[in-house]
Amino acid sequence: MGEVDPAFIQAPEHRPKLSIIEAQGIPLIDLSVLNSSNDTIDDALVAKIGDACKKWGFFQVINHGVPLEKRQRIEEAARKFFAQPLEEKRKVRRDEKQVMGYYDSELTKNVRDWKEVFDLTVQDPTFIPASPDPDDEEIDEWHNQWPEYPPELREAFEEYVKETEKLAFKLMTLIALSLGLPGNRFQGFFKDQTSRVRLNHYPPCPAPHLALGVGRHKDSGALIILAQDDVGGLEVKRKSDGEWIRVKPTPDAYIVNVGDIIQVWSNEAYESVEHRVMVNSERERFSIPYVLNPAHYTNVKPLDELINELNPAKYRAYNWGKFFATRKLSNFKKLNVENIQIAHFKIQELSNKLEGGLTIN
Ligand code: OGA
Ligand code: NI
Image (cartoon, rainbow, N blue to C red; front, top):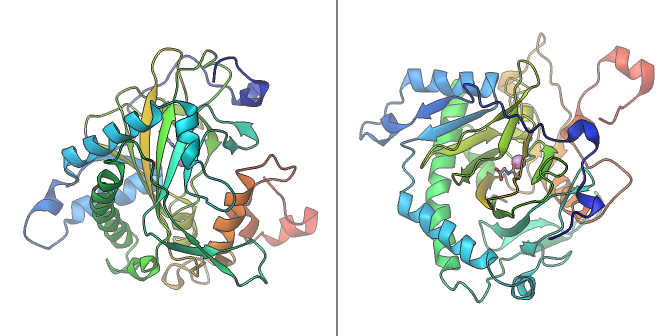
C-alpha cells in the first residue's frame, strides 16, 4: 500500500486520537456454565448478557467452547494467504459477479479502509437476491473461491465455522432469554442463513493518525463474533458518553456485538453500536469476524412480543436480502448517496415528519 493515497484520509473529525482510552472496557463474560452437562440455563448469565447488550452492545466471552486449535489453524492459514504477492491474491479477487474472495479497496462511508480482506460465505451456496431492485425476483447463488495457497485454508475454515456457529446459536439463545423470549425464538430465521466470515489483514500504516483500518460503522447483520489477535486496534463508541474505547485483546476470547438486525428485532432494547479499527505504523494486525445473518427472505421487523401500545414498533419491515444486496453494491463504488441504513426504515415521530420528512444520517 506504500504512500498514503488521499482516498484513505479521514475527515479531521473522524481521525483517531493517538491517546488511547482503554478504561475498564467492555464486559468480559465467562460462558463456562454452558459447558456443563445439565441443560438449565443460568439466570445470572442471562442477566449479564442482557446488561452487556443494553449498556455496551459489545462484550467479550471466555470459556466459549470453541477449541483454540481450530482458531489457531484458520489464523495461521489467513497469515499465509495474505503474505503472498498481490498477483496471487488477485487470482481469487471478488467482483460484482463473484462476491466472495479477496479485496483490497473497500470503502467505509466513502473513505478507503487500510486493510485487505478475504470474504467467505458460511453456506455454500448462499442464496441472495440478484439485485437491489424490489421488483426483480431473480436469486443469485454465492459460492466460495478457494485459493491455491495455502491448501489447508478450506478445511480450516469449514472446521472453524462449525464451532463459531455453535457459539453464535448459544448466544442467540441467551439473548432471546434476556429479552424475555423463549430460548429458541430466533432459530427459525437462520434456516437458510446468509452468514459470512471475513479474514481481515491490516498492514502497518505510515499515517495511523490520518487513516483507519475500518472507518466508523455499525454492523448490519444479526450477531458478530470476532477473533482479534494480540495487536489491538478495535475501538467501540461508548454509549454513555460517545468516547472511543479500545477493546483490549484478551487471549482466546471472542468479541461479540449486536448488529442492526437485533436492534430492529428487539425494537431498540439493544442497539448496534458504532466501532472502528485503528492501525499502527509498526505491527500488522489480523482479525476474523463471523457474522450471523438470517435467510435472505427474512422480513426484518420488531418482534410482535416486544411491542405494544406504549412501546410501538420503531421500524418498518425491510427485506434482508434486498438490504444486503444494496449494501454489497455500494461497498464497491464511491457513491454520492449515503449507504443503505436501518435508519431509513425507522418510523419517524409525527413532529419530525412534519418538519422535514425522512432524514438521512
Ligand atoms: C468489521 C469490523 C473489526 C476488527 O470488519 O466490520 O468491525 O477488529 N472489524 O477487525
Ligand atoms: Ni464491524
